Length: 204
Image (cartoon, rainbow, N blue to C red; front, top):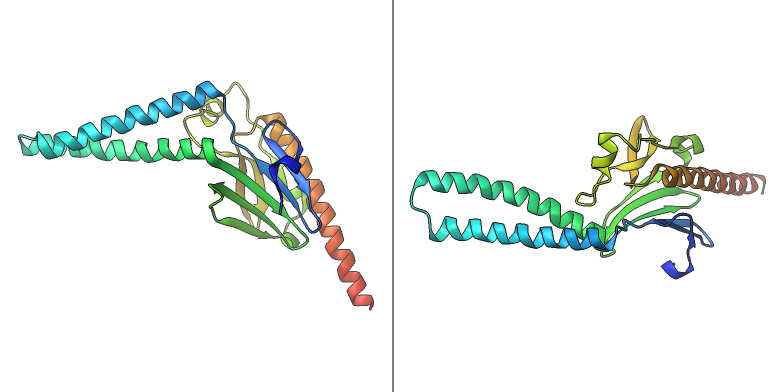
């Protein structure tokens, strides 16, 4: 069992701790207070718009054309309501939790401590399987990906069984570089431990 207070800080958003049988790394989706307040205000305003659409559809409609128009608007509203709500919950209560031991690497996107972990066999991962994805800070893609009103994309690539998986959501280039190096070092360490135990078991 681990707690945030006992973890070491790698960057302002990344903490880690070595346990008896594993190492855990936690990435926090922290944003500025004004950004959080803006997100809350946007969510409230957008939710109010949706309630207005629903009221008008069921109580004020006069024609079939109006129903179609507001039906389309309502579908549009639902799509963005889900996205905004997801972004708010992620910013306020979300964590990325990475766990490495002698058998596996697991990555979990957690909200309220709920979420399914993606598990990868450590035997199939080399330190070089992990790399940070550099993105030009001035590029339009980087600016949009780092926007506080969306969850964004991962900045660490894991090459596993001929596929590439991304995690480390919206990390700055310097942070993702530090995290990639820590992961490479940790993977190498636990693979060596596993190999040493296997060699001892074979000799006995």
